[in-house]
Amino acid sequence: MEPSVGKILLIDDDPFQCAAIESIIKKMGYDCHCVYSGIEGFTLLKTSHFDIIFLDLNLHEGSGLMHIPRLTELNPEVDIVMLTGESDSDCISEAFAAGVKDYLVKPIKEERFRSVIQNLLRLKARQKNESSPLIREEIIGDSKALNQCLERLAISAKASGNVLITGETGTGKELFARALHNNSDRKDNRYIVVDCTNLPSTLAESLLFGHAKGSFTGADQDRKGLFHLAHGGTLFLDEIGDLDLGIQKSLLRVLQEKTFRPLSSSKEIYSDFRLVAATNRNLEEMVARGEFRRDLYYRLQTNIIELPPLRERNGDVELLTRHYLPILCKENDMEEKEVDPQFIETLRLYDWPGNVRELVNVLHVSLQKARFSNYLNIYHLPQQLRMRRVFQDMGENEESQQECSAPPMPYFLPSTLEEFPAMKAARQEAVDAMEQAYLQRLVQLSDSSVAMACKLSGLSRARLYELLSKHNLSLKKS
Image 1 (cartoon, one colour):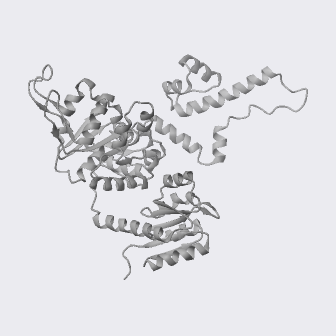
Image 2 (tube, rainbow, N blue to C red):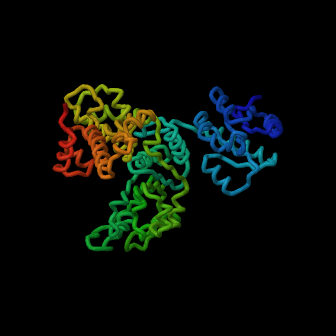
Image 3 (tube, rainbow, N blue to C red):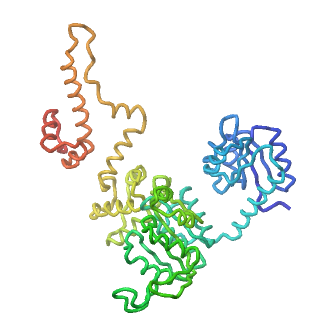
C-alpha cells in the first residue's frame, strides 16, 4: 500500500551516492526522485510536490545553501535536510540559519538516515491530522513571510509554553498575541493586556500581583492582580523590553512557580496563566548590556514568532489596502472609492518604515484628501510617497538612471593652449552647472512647495529665491 506521505527528492551530483540513498528510501516504501543539480530540482518542483529534500552542500554549481530560498519558494511546506562531508561548526550553523531541518554528515549511517525520514514524515502526518482552520483575526496577507509566521502561530497556539513575539513597530504583534489566545484551548477565558511601556514602577507590583487591604495609603480593600485575573487565560505583556529590572526579577519567579504573593499578604496565590510577550527591541543585546535579565530572556524563548516588516511581505501591501479602505471609508462616513492602479503601485514601491500601522495612516490621510472625489489616485498620497515614486521611476533602468541622476558636464575642456581656462573660472562654471542641475531636481521634487524645498535643501527662503532667480527657475506651477 502506498504511504499517504513520503515523496522524497535527492539533490546530489554524486551518482553513486544517489543510487545508495535511493535504494534505502525505496526499501522503506517511499517514493524517491534523484537529480544532480539545483536547477534540475527547481524544474521538477514546478510540477511536483515533495515532503523532504535531501540537499548536498557541495554541488558542482556551488553551495547547496544558495538554492534553499528558491526550493522553499517552490515548495513552502518541504523539509530540507543537508547532506555533506563538512562537519565544521560554522557550516552547521550556517545551514540551520538558512532553514534546514537537519544535517547529515557523510558517510551517512543508514540507521540515522532512516530515523530522520521516519520522524519528519511522522511529524508531517500528525500536523496534517491535527490541523484546523486558523482564526486569523485582522491578520491580513498571503506572502510567504507572513504564512511562515502563521504556521508558527498555529503550532504555538496548541502548545503550552511561553511565547515571545518580536518585530518592528507596527508589524502586528498585538494581533498575533490575540490570535494566539483565540486559537488556544484558553480562548473561552480572559485575555489580559499589559502595556509595559506605561507601567509605573511604583505601582507595577500592585497591578500585577495585587495587594492586601492596608498595604499602602489608599488600599482600602483587597485587590486581585492581573496574574490572578488571568487564571485559565492569557496574559499579554506588550513591549516587555521596557519592563523595570526589579519587576523582571519578580516576573521570573512567577513564571517558574506559577505562584505569587500579593503585597502585604501572607497567602500564596496559584494562577494557571499563559504568558505571551512582545517587543520591538533586541533583547539579546539588552541582556549583553545588563538591561534585561538573562534568566528571564531564556524563560521567554520557549516559542518565538519573529514578524517580518511590511517591506519583506511581497504582495501583502495591496491585500492590506483592499482590506482597510472599505473599513476606513465606513468610519469616515464615505462611499467606497475606486482606486487607480498607480495608487497601489506607489504604495507597493514604498519601504514602509512604520509597517502596517503607517500604511493604515497613509490610507486615512489619502481618503481625507479625496473626500469629495470618487477616485483615489497618486496625487491623494502624502508627498514623501510621491517623491519616492519619482526616485523609483528614475532607477527603472540603468541608462535612464544615469541620464537623470548624473549632473551634466559643465562644459568640454578645450584642447588648445590658448582656450584653456584658469582654475578659478573652471571651478565657477562647474559650480553653476551643479547648482542648475540641483535646483531643477529640487523644483521637481518639492511639488511647488517652498516649505518642502527649504526642508529638502537646507536653504533659507531668501537664499532659495536668490538661487532660483539666478538660474531663471521658479517654484510656481506652469
